[in-house]
Image (cartoon, rainbow, N blue to C red):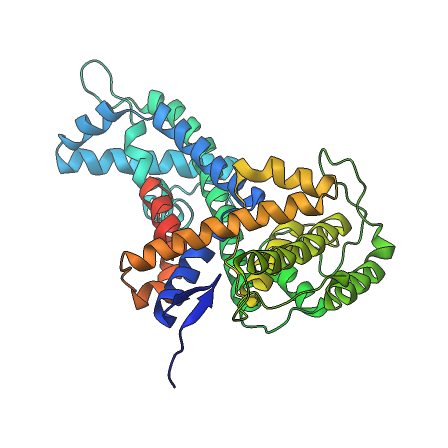
Length: 377
């Protein structure tokens, strides 16, 4: 079947260009939630602690040692890590006496230490391996590295949840209330404290001057919101791509679309229908609707969050509409520039294989890995 060109904001893109640009966009969208940005920032903090505490000279000296001595030092360091793991109840039981059993436990629970371990070896002034000093030095690594691994798992899972929710939304013609519930379920899928469906307890928004809708009133308010949206909130929504209309009329019609989306988004976020994931769910719906109306999606990053929150807090529809229109216009400019520059569409990047994602989930947790995550999709 022939793939037709796609028009966004009056600009024409080939189907392949649009598919590539949209997949690149969703990669950015998957990390623009404040919760996800915070999770990735936590990774950077732990990585900084590791960079600050590891000893490059010790590693270089270790690499000069005979193989037999290297193996012996590794074995001792593995025993120390397994000991700390036993104290932290990472695995059941005590540290076994058998070196092979210790290696089995290390490989099962602590293999992600391999990339860092030898930077924490200690040697005395005569170049001899200092087991006691190494024992104490590894206590710092045992505190930091599992925290880094956990922070990575949280950030990675939140990002993948966001991507799955976006992929689900983009397959829909219209987003209904039941679709909204499904999107939120996908967005929060990896959250151990997730609550299925609407919020079960009342929630507050930090530093907001308003109180979100009471949990008992959420179903009714959501029904009203979607009914009002279907009726365009009483606005006159006309096709901005209609032929033989003036430029000013075209801009006015575009602006009305952003007014409509601003009203929906502000009301949705003020209802705050879920215990968590309201911002991520709301922005997925917002961008789905913009694309449906042939408008470029928006990207709301951390540095834009103060203005974004202010418009919601003050119920400032016009401010939000102009804010969204400016962000959408910038996205369209970027897309147009990339298309004119002759972007190269890599099919393997558009639809990454699940096996590759699984491989990343199992690999070590260093800087190179984090960079791979950021640019994988």
